[in-house]
Figure 1 (cartoon, rainbow, N blue to C red):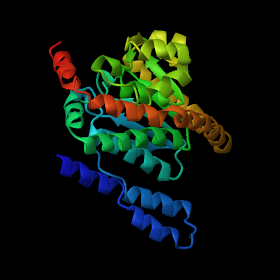
Figure 2 (figure 1 turned 180 degrees about the vertical axis):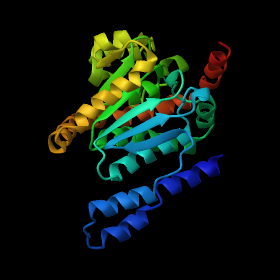
Figure 3 (figure 1 turned 90 degrees about the horizontal axis):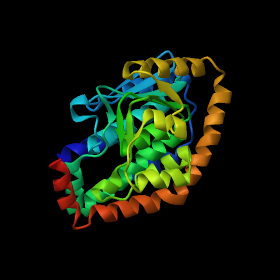
Length: 298
């Protein structure tokens, strides 16, 4: 399994640091928009955990493992970042919607992978790199991101949802960062995403307890920007907002997104590296395996 994941990483990002050094010595060559689009289409990866579609200037990423509640394991991390990079390289994309199949947006991390990381420092190191790629991939994407939360968004699922620029959610959706319930530090971006959305004091309240809030509560707090009455109404509402953004002049929209992203990047600089290091420290704690076993019995 680990070898397969490494092959996937190489396929998604084939250029090594040595390759990048060689490329940096070459003079820059202008590439036409048509050529950029052709290259992006050719290098589009085949995904197993999500679907990517781009049509009429709107990109959609759908988490596509409803039987696993769209959990975020190593493969999902890699493919999500690869999809973001593909969108960034595609000409004419104006807005991204992140949605999901089934009854959950994403149930967060995978217990088996946590136990593997508990036993292996090298896996923990890779988890740090994967978390960094997800957070920076969302922040650095030069176009607006809309999350369509039709069901439970837990742990990293809640982080990805709340890192979006616009959050559409079903009023009954369950949203929580439950790292502390597993004995883990909420270090994969939740501290930044929640504090930026609902304020630091309220973020402390919910990340220090792991308590669940509904989509309706999240709307009252400011984490959710648009409410839908049913799970089925979430994606159409997100698409309607995306269509409004697509109709606007891109210079204003993308420049405004970049300005907001600079604020988020500053928050990441304040807390992310410490938070993810502390999460990996808690991942290696002797009590983790016992806590996971107890949670699995529920």
